[in-house]
Amino acid sequence: MQQMKKGPENLPGLSFDRSDRPQSATSLLTGPVGAIAAVLAIYAVSNPDIPLHVKALAIVASTAAAMIIVEIVFFKVYLNPSTGLASAPLRPLSVERTFRKLVGFITTLCALAAGYWVLAEYQGSFYAPYWAALKLCMPWLLVLAPFYVAYVDRRQTEPEDAYAALGAIIMYGRPIADIRAVWLHILGWIVKAFFLPLMFVYLCSSLTSFLSAISGDGPAGIVDWHRLGIDLFFLYDVIFAAAGYSLTLRILDTHIRTVEPTAFGWIVCLICYQPFYSVTFSYLAFSDQARWQAALPEGYLLQSLWGFAVLFCLFIYAWSTVCFGLRFSNLTHRGVITSGPYRWMKHPAYVSKNMSWWLISVPFLGQASYAEAIRHSILLLSVNGIYLLRAMTEERHLSWDRDYVAYKDFIRREGLWARILNLFGRRPAASGGL
Image 1 (cartoon, rainbow, N blue to C red):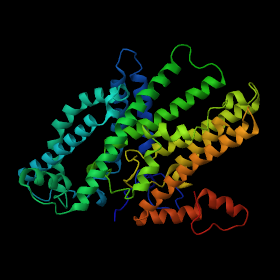
Image 2: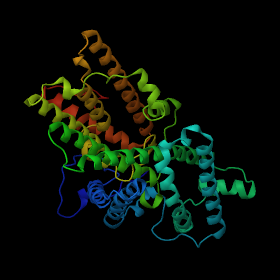
Image 3: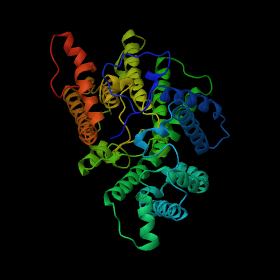
Image 4: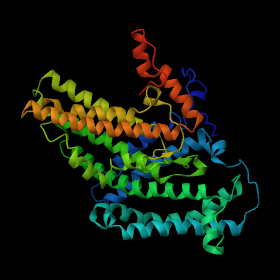
């Protein structure tokens, strides 16, 4: 069982009322430092002459580098027992095993490349920014990989990992000794292969929108400022997501512990993303009515308050991603997050995102008829149901970890919903909490 590392609660001069809340896998300091680095990087790459994929790479690299420095220098995450690494080398360098692991690594990359080549989804222009970025990064990855593998191998408590097993199959035809480890390796790389290109492309799109919004005379009026806020929060979301999917490393304690074990868990997650998203939401299209800007009287206080409520929801959504630091990932467990908005509820990103959809699309204010308003509200409720299923499958997956079970119990007793119930003199149910 992993032991959570020290967080900012333990820094001299800082005092936090944590009650018995389990320690968060990522410190309170890591995400904000990355967020500041992201702002500086966005400003630095605002020159229109810089290619879009280079801008996106620079922002992700700067954000990740800042968080890595915090994690290594301040919190020494490489010493966490959950890394499976010793603080000093346990053995001399094994050239044979290091080479085997590199063969396993190259085999994994080749299998992914073949998948990208075969699948028609990846042949269009949508993923062009990702391929351009990959061409820049791949030589560096291949150069640095041998040094990283050799460093980690000497310190691993169990050096015969999935990479070594795959290398043994290729080099010697040796049967797999630990099928579970190799299966986890395969599923983890499938998750990364699906989401990393997607998040990078989303990042390029969000970055373009944001830089366009701040160019020229900048925002003018509440609607423009509202759109700028939305662009900024979604930009932060995909920056941290791209960094998280890129850095699943033992030395940072951001490696994958487990992957969602059920097909149903994968399905309810993947249908929320392209290319499946287009099919899902063609049936559940709830937002083709006039949105809040048109539904509410312009220039009145209600419109300003409504716009602020939308931005607040999206701020919570982005903050939830930032709190993961280098650990953000769908379908995988890479450490339990209990700080930030996760101090108050188990699924703040899902709750805030779904609330924002109600506020933005206002399906209950159908301009055509009451029947249309009811129909669109039912469609949005169906989308909310998908995210409820995602939350349920994620909780089931994470509940193998005693830290997460303790966290669920803490939220049941001390979370936002429990506090609200306490105000009315009611006790939360045994499985309560959001």
